[in-house]
Amino acid sequence: MRQPIDRREFMRLAGYGGVVFASGLGAACSSYPQASGKPAELDDFYFVQMSDAHWGFEGPPNPDAKGTLKKAVEAVNSLSQPPDFIVFTGDLTHTTDDAKVRRQRLSQFKEIVSELKVKDVHFMPGEHDASLDHGEAFQEFFGNTHYTFDHKGVHFIALDNVSDPRASIGEEQLQWLASDLKQQPQDANIVVLTHRPLFDLYPQWDWATKDGAQAIELLLPHPNVTVFYGHIHQEHHQMTGHIAHHAAKGLMFPLPVAGSQPKRTPLAWDPAQPYKGLGFRDVEAQAKQAAFQLTELPVQKA
Image (tube, rainbow, N blue to C red; front, side):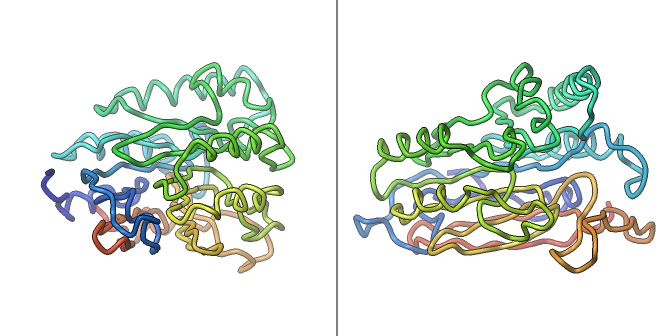
């Protein structure tokens, strides 16, 4: 049994991404008990989630555009208790029409994150990485854009809803998802990782997946499903049936609440409160109660 993560260590990550602490996560990813009525006996674990690094972005609103990602790597490396693994939920780099520059940015990003002490790292593309070339450059550096992996009784599914410039998952990948889910027990413990929200949060700002409802329909028969995503650069929580969806704050700049202003422009940097709007979350899951608690912690200047 691992020792609990010291909350002060979480605070050191403030402004640099997201932290997910999972205590028996597989048995507690939803508020519904397992079909057997008994929680699975799973080891505690936690993982770090980072999202929307936008490496290559320059100018307002982030005066530390070239330093934030490196600080995040240093912060994760400084944890006295390393996470089991790390996930990057998209927009590793900032978009560019130049294929050569796109590859340069992906290469620079990969070099920076190679300094992470934890080597079990799972990468996913965002539309900034993949929509202009259908994920070709991303795959050269990081492999498949959608895949699965298992960790201590939890089945993780990384979905690609960005390589298609129409903001779709696509029929082929939906069939792949359906096939994968058929191989899982009905009461499987499932965590879905994606970049865009699967539900229609605010389609006017591209905060949706055109065929996301089909993915949700495939997932609904499983009572223990939780979705973690990025893209909107802010905390947000949504339920679709019994499936909880949780958005992560980003590494580069915060975005406004959906529809709160005419355009989806980044929020201004506040010199008096650096990194305001960038933050992290810890998710503490209680296996016996088959429930979990999310605690959003404020950004604090180091």
